[in-house]
Length: 131
Image (cartoon, rainbow, N blue to C red; front, top):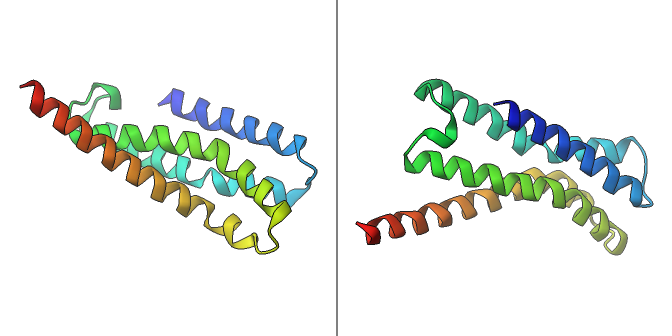
């Protein structure tokens, strides 16, 4: 559980550094960083409850739902790092960028769900072929 809290804190620091390199500063940028971390906090809570229910760490649970949660967490980490920076770059060229700021957690969760589903299907096929 501690590694997830450390990763959320590390991503927060990385996003602050990336926003400081950009020309847009202020409380709005900080709120976007925090807004983009909502999927990670959500997955952290879901994984925490899942681990509590199984009384094991997520990486020790041998089920397809654990793989789905694991790949969702990894994808959310990747997109929580890159999404605020990409949206900040898009905001320079697009005047209708506020909807992207608002939808960034939903976009992250949607992409995480698709990647976790794809990874679990691939793992299921690999495990079936290895038997």
